[in-house]
Length: 302
Image: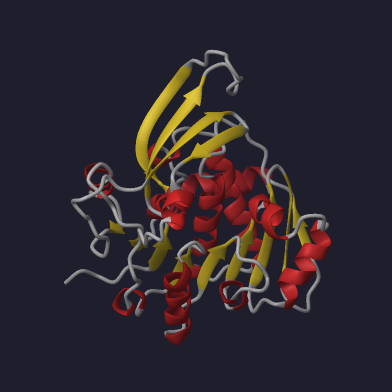
């Protein structure tokens, strides 16, 4: 009988085609040289699963349906890792969901067909199963899948499973009951245009039962809880090769922190170190942070 995974992840699991350019980002009507390219697991949940496995955490993941072009790569990649794919569905009538990312240092541009799928009313993801969530020790839930997202959160609440989420606005149920909500610049641009970071944090903290973290790329992070003060932390200093997967790795660090009972300061520091290591290498799925590397970075730069 298979042992229960420590962490349950629900959300985007993709096949990501990544292209690292040699001489800077794309310019209109100009040739660009590809330095490296890969087809590897991606998506917010796929990347987090890869990182957590590298940190020594067993994972069960569910979410996006995996089609014919993505499935062989995904199964091969995870066959020697602590990632359980048994709840994923593998339809044989479509190639699967993929994205394409062009990268040059600090700049990247993702492309896909997610809006088209949404506009067509296609549910390209599974329904979370209670038996997968019950018995795990922490979870991560992406905010993209409507009723199924809410079902995953409600099942976590039912069984007392703390969950981490990302980019959930202060008015959402997903934010309200999360153990950790990590809010990025993308969420700020969509929901909080014209507001300063302190005001955004006030709105988020006042509606949260857990920890709120506002990341700002290379600028300092803000974090705090309802009724408390806003804390700040600068990112770790590393040489950037690619920012692809930085936020997903930060989320994985938060799940690890919840699992290990870290304090808020420890959790933010650990997650920031994970993310820093992630942006210092490419491709991330082939070189995810190891626990010893994270601990060493914290020791040398804390």
